[in-house]
Every structure is written in C-alpha cells, then in structure tokens.
Length: 359
Image (tube, rainbow, N blue to C red):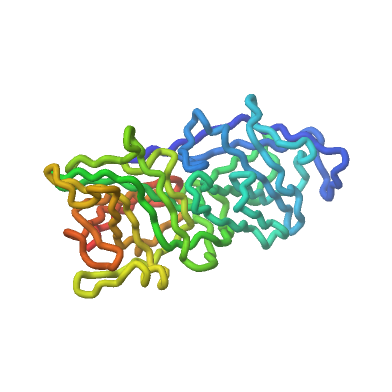
C-alpha cells in the first residue's frame, strides 16, 4: 500500500501594504495565513519529502464573488517560516468569504497563470523537452472560505501532470547496457482548468485542453553508473532505469502508439510523420558474452509506446522486458520487446490500477 504523506507548513503571516487599494472591508487583527498539505510532490523531477518540502513555492489568487482580491502573491519559505516573497503582496482577511486558488511552482518560464477574472481559473503550461527543466506542476483551492479561528487557510495540493519512469529486466543469460531512452511524439502544451470543487482527498481532478502537434521528444534521465555511464541489466533482475531526479513529468494524454509488425513494417520516419509514439533505446545487448547489438558503439532499438490514457497525479512504471525490438525501418530485430506496465498512486487519486501486459 503506497503511503501518502501530509506535511503541515508553518503559518504564513502576511503583512499589509499601505499603498494597496483595498476593495473590501478588512479585519486589521487577522492576517491571512496558510497551512500547506502535499502528497509526494515532485519539483524539477525530484521527489519532495518532509525534509525538503520548504524548497517548493507557490502563488495565490482569491476572489470574493466575481471580485478579485488576492492577485498572485508569491509565497515561499524563508528558512524559518512560510512568508510572502514581497511585502507588497500581503493581505488581511476581508469580511466576505473567499474562493482561493494556488499554483506551484510560483515562477516557471513555461507556466502562465490565468485568473484574470473569476471565470478564468486556469493556467497554461508547456512541458520542456529538457528533463532538468520539467517541473511538478501542482494546484490547490479552498472555496467559499471565511476567516477561521486561527486565520489559516488549509490548502491541499494535487499534481496536474503524469509521471513516467522505467525499469528493466531481460532473459537469464542476457546483459543489457543502456545509454539512453527517448520517448518520441508527445503533446507538450495545454491549458489546465481548475475543478469546480475544492481540492481534497479523493476530490475531482481539473481538466487539460491540449494544444499543438504531438511532436515533442523527451529524453529520460536514465541511471548512469560509472565508468561507462550506463544503466546495466543483468538477466531477470528487475533494475531501475530512471534516476530519482530524472523522471518524465508530462501532460496527461493518450499518445497514439506506433504500429509495426514483421509482416507489415512501418518505418519510424512514417511514425514521425503521423505523430505516433515510440521509444528509442540506445544500448548494447550481450548474450553469453556475445554482442547481439552494439559490439562497436551503441545500437538503437525502437519500441512502440503509448496507447494508455495517462492521468494527472499518477505515476506510470514501465518495465521493459528485453528480448529485442524493431529496427528504424520497422522490421523485427530479434524477438519484439514486451512491456509489463503498472501504475501507482503518485498523489491524491482513486484506487490503484494494474495495466495488462502489451500483446
């Protein structure tokens, strides 16, 4: 059973700006504070634990009815407590109830908040094809919320993206030395709209409207063991192929799977033209000391991929069972590789799902 962690952050004391034009009546005795709840979040492709939760930050917007009240104040940890990044963005509690929305990370080149009006509760995001530039985009909301006794807003963050990782195993007499794994032809941009209900355990996810063509290529942050900087699979031993800070954080989608068979070969150039998804694996494959692939340099194997509806807040674990794959022209190289995919709860979501092996 996957554990779910909740991390209570120190209260945020928000100081008021004298120059800010206030529309609503405010209670001068009660500053708005926040209590942050998060599951196993990932920022810059690195899982956050109770030890590094304070490395995350977020921005907050709030409306009372259709009137905007909080306007994207940035909140981060200053080493001692959670506080606004700028003293010009502080707010006191108004007399009216608030609808509160938060987005993390607070600042990212590829993330553009909406919130121009109370009906534009969204943000746009482009998932960078550079692994280290990907972010664990999260969101939280608290609706129709009035000042409580402790003046604190509890925000439950949920993951807006899907997480993809790889493991591998092979036949008993086989050694596989992997240099790189690349996922071809995914969509990378879209607009996320907040759900109508506030975020909580088991609450509904928001929705994505994807844009653009499925032509993005993502390089997995693979394990890189010295001296050759490879991930090595020895026989049937299940091996992690993705570094802890090398996971793929992609937009939820159902990628169109490349289809090729021994009797009807379809080259990857056609797959690219048709925006069909596949893996490109750079490797050496050795059986009983004999190189079948990559005796001089690394060879490449191509594997049909996708076809599964990736959901927000879920971690998809693909186990590559090495026995072959396809060449670039779509013809069979040895015996086609098989997948053993599973999915586990990454954040707040329904029951676990186990996907059947690919045919």
